[in-house]
Length: 409
Image (tube, rainbow, N blue to C red; front, side, top):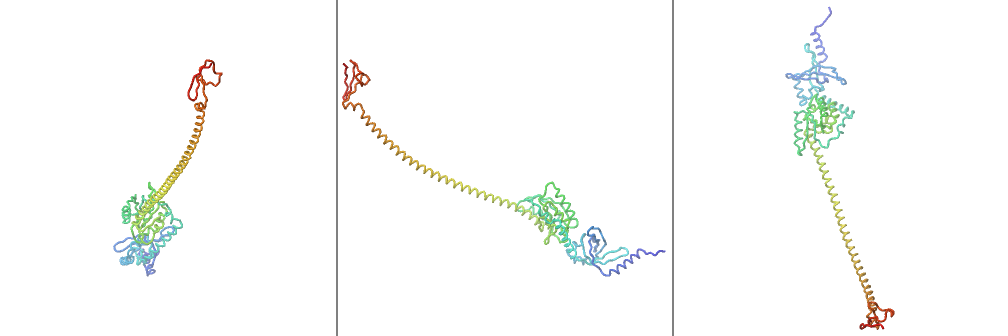
């Protein structure tokens, strides 16, 4: 008959082999697939994936018993829930334990938080290197930003304090600016951030009216809380957006990958609202300054033209006055000249009249008669020759002192 063992015997052998080969606990690297808490204990599923294919290469259950769990809590302090979360790579000290009934289980005795934080930093650096190789780091920053930001798409958790702070700060601005804000809810922590962000980014780009700005915000949190915003896939979604993105996701000290690929990055949701208000205020001030500049230039030109017109008017007035003075002087000269000409002409004409009068006087018949001459007429005819007379004609003879009548014999 063939030799065989019972299952219990085999498992006893395996238990002894494990105990003999793992007398001391060992440090291992693994990713937390799932974790649950029952009573005072924590139960984990650990796995290791192929870096290229994401195929699961190894998987095992693990447990942190109550005493060690209390020790880990004190050691991790505020990072406890951040590190002991699904999807986080951890460096843990485990002692393999095999039980005949329950199989292999890794009993966790310690955890190195610096490894997880370091892994996240290395993962961030690798993601940043890939984004730079793909020329995505500055892509969103090169998109033109609207002169005035009015229509805003916000990606955040509707119940987060950060979203409420953003909305209150935005709408209570001191300048009366109004905004059209639409919320696109996303997870702001954990493994669903990238998936939610990608889905809502697509919805935003399909909106009927284009948005001026996409704002991604969440409240503060630890470095582990915000680890999703250091993921390559999350940052790439933002980098490929055709709408400018503003991030205010709560990093007080370090910039996340999402901050690095966005066009505008601020530290908090309140700062995001302030930035938008101040951006619009800058535009308003620029318009106001331009108005003042145009007004000043207009007044300068008006004053210059007014001054030139006044100068021209004064010149015209002076020219007219000088021309009038010149013409008056010319008229005065002409008047004097005309008076002189008139006087000269009158004098000359008077002399001519006097000479004519003298001639007339000299030739006056009365004057001639006084010199002994006489004038004989027959009717109205002056007798110039005896042949004009006949015997019996009655003629009248005029001498200086009178007339007498004669009869021709």
